[in-house]
Image 1: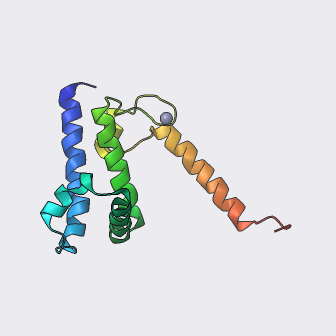
Image 2: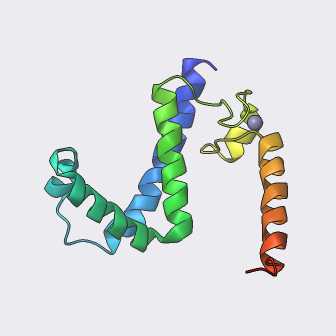
Length: 130
Ligand SMILES: [Zn+2]
């Protein structure tokens, strides 16, 4: 993928990210900007506490999405963007345009959905020895 396209995806990802975080910051206005700027310097404990707080405010879905967006931005930096994390094939650009933070190609995703269904069926029928 050429640099121009990567830059487009990157800015798309960053706007998704700031939208997600923007919603949190509105409900969290007591956090000063300078404190956010110092995030890199704070201890792991504090970072974990911050992450837990963020996780609570974003909810499970928003948190998962944020992590996927972060991973995708990292991959752009490492020039690995658009490669399926499961099979290593190139993810079609058409798919990336719809879901720029996707980690998997459509084929792997449908495989995973099948597996998820299989797991949930098993959950409904627990082993008798349990
Ligand atoms: Zn794949």
